[in-house]
Image (cartoon, rainbow, N blue to C red; front, side, top):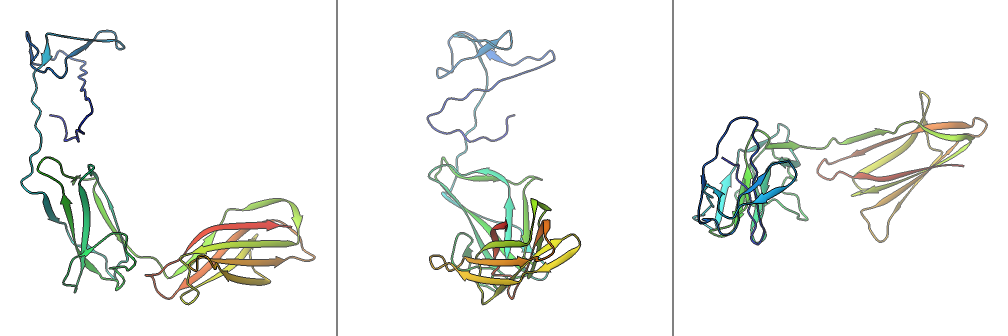
Length: 264
């Protein structure tokens, strides 16, 4: 038996049988019952010749759905201490003209909330438990699906409220006394977040001599940090970038878009 598969309208399909033993498959002869196709025989591993009289005997079972909308409630999502993120990994398909969507109901909330791209976060209150359901919409003949096997997983999580990131050792190729670091932060709100750019030179952690933060006027959620490091009298030939930061809410967490390190 073949596993379930999506057969899209307008395409041609074929299936192959390979055996290393003495096996047989039922076949019919005479008038070709399957007028839309035929059996092909391969003798040398490369060339296949079609038959006009013989064909494999098989039956194709197509799905017939009773409803055009099906709701499936899943196991509750749980994380002690609360979660702000939910990741689901599964196999499945969503044919054109159908829809597969997810809805969530955090503990203490009465209504189901669409769990999709939305300006507000239904997990903003850090629920420790939330009900989850999948809504599948289609027709009697075509519908989306997922495979709930051992590979299907659901992962809950939340971000930390502090950040520390250290880059690999960056060799400049020459000795320099002045370093400029430019860090672009996105989803950044100075009212809730901060950032401290530092350098690691050997085992020493070096603070910047000056740091300026500029909010992008065209995208207020992006902030550019510019830090200057002065190693006057003690030039260096390499360093590591070390970024440290904090947020007062794990619901709104920024991320580093890119870092530029200039040695003069």
